[in-house]
Length: 280
Length: 330
Image 1: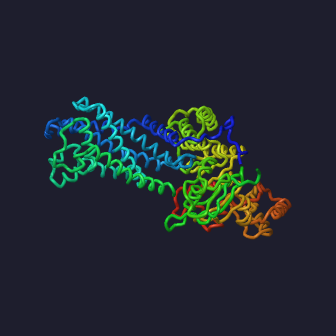
Image 2: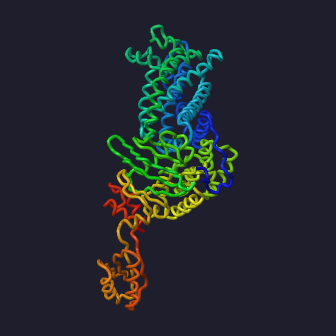
Image 3: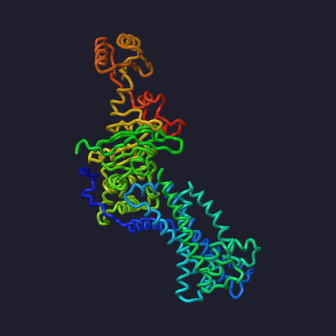
């Protein structure tokens, strides 16, 4: 069956190497990162856009929102970073839908590689994408007066929590990306869901100042746990008031819990949807 | 190795909800040959290729590529074949070279080899100058060539091409045909789908005609043309004045003589060469000057019309299908 050789490629093709899932995924990551290098404007959603948010909130609302024992700018930064990580689900979904639409996923699927490598590669590059945003945010924050006031370990733990939560969001993104038929649909859906999700929370305003029904929603919103965890670990802003909902009393634990729970819920849904999309 | 099958479709069926896209399709492609899957838009060609290339799981039935079962051993199938999809699926933001390297790495080719292979392929497909430009800047023909180069990086023994020349200008089509013919000379087995009848006629050793998910005919291009009825003898007289007398003569030899005064051309059904020779004899003796005399075989489009009762275009009259027919008739 191997008597057939091919083309004028002068030398004999060496045998195909068995490459691990990690190697395959890294090749996909390399390809996705090349995309960012070729089209740096892809990073606008995690750079200029959140920087603008920081500046608008800090200077427009900052004056009229009082944060006890802290400044609004310190209070704001963890919130905006949490929002950036939540939006990584949109980053994943848009990238995946784009590849599905353009037939790139089909091409990958026709190759002797694990199909998971396409998803893992997409997830890792999206987390890198969002991490670039976090770095930009941190630099912007430092420039306008945000500071980390706790130890190095706590500070690093907060960044790890952001990544962990981002990982859970990646699965949500893959699920949505596999279900939607166009990039425009993904954008429409994601932004409609993500904006209320990241605003009805403790990200930009204190839930204590909201009407009681809204406060209840905001305090149970997983985004609030993540934000509160970062604030606690970086020493930004006051701890939650004694009558706050349970997740805000133990924000670090709650964030870990939400991340694991979302991964357990969304990962199987995402893989099933991706498989369904890729079988026809 | 002669006589081995490179591709086999075994009672392939694919249902999407209530619609049956592919309905019990079977065929086989011997190693080193070219099979053309011919049919209008929506006939089930692409779905059949997707099942054979492991992109889509058959509802029932199976297929074999290079001896491996597409349902049970998809991994081995993927190691033995290349696929060039309907839309040129090159990565627009990567350069030509990077596209080849990306797919080569995923196949598991060593980097050092890949570097040389990329150079060779780029040269072979006349893309050396554009090698380091992103594929977004490529023309349609260049994209197709890159797509094909990418599919060939691992030198697969079997190559699937889904409508490889759809949307290409005539010159690019002919160039691509030459490349494909070269591949076949070097031993690659090709399975290509097309709605262009001339493409199947030019490239394929065997043609399988599909319509509405079913195989409605198969054979060599010549067999299919023979099946769809008689050839016609066509002759052109040198002088307008001879037309009536020529028509009279031809009527003695055949029924249903058709006269086209503008082009001084007469035609009549003829079952084969014997009949044509007789007619040639008659005209030689008559003294009428004849510019041209020959046997015209039916085109594949005639075959399609004969087999399906409709022209080789999609039911909704999609422009792609119509264009296919027009180009085929040209």
